Length: 275
Image (cartoon, rainbow, N blue to C red; front, side, top):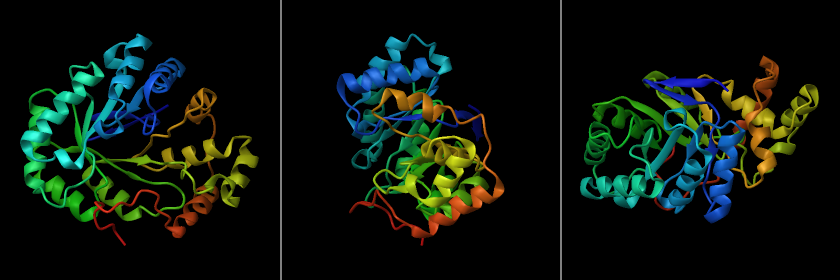
């Protein structure tokens, strides 16, 4: 699996998302993923599974420098003093001295962005993380965050799948040298995998619909996908997407599905999304 270079961070283009995974199931899946070949693991303080993720990492026996680990600070902890404490607690739960990427999980409507970006940069300066970034930032907030940050932002992690148009965000990320990391990349609950452009490509390439969608993600410049699964057999399938290439016509047909604009993660604290 190739890596995406984003403002100095080399990030594996497929990672394991761990949202909703808990306890031994989470630890076992993380360990199995690493043993399968995953080198990118994504978690967050809000997921309440960092200890389990850390157990899986430790049991895998993989050298620390061979693994890219991301965690995130929840929107209720974005004031400077709370941010630092949250990041340190995440490291303690993970059993790591530093993460590879620390993200603002969601922007805050009440804490000034300048304060949070300063705290994010301080976390990097003090060695808590190797790289920094944001999550769920529409283009206006992303531009503001980029201008406020002393260090370049490696990532904007957002919901992205074939039924949601994120062209504006992706364009802004590319302009800033920032990778766009797709969560819910398979369109959890939207029945994307049965739609005709994906089914047709799956038949043409002898691949699963899920592999087609993940290939669609990573064939786009600067896009990384972090599919979550609870099934061990899916781990290898989701990672095995390097042996084929979607045609321009297939990419265009799948991309045309974005006009549906179905968003899965939209909450009362969400920012104003790009139209």
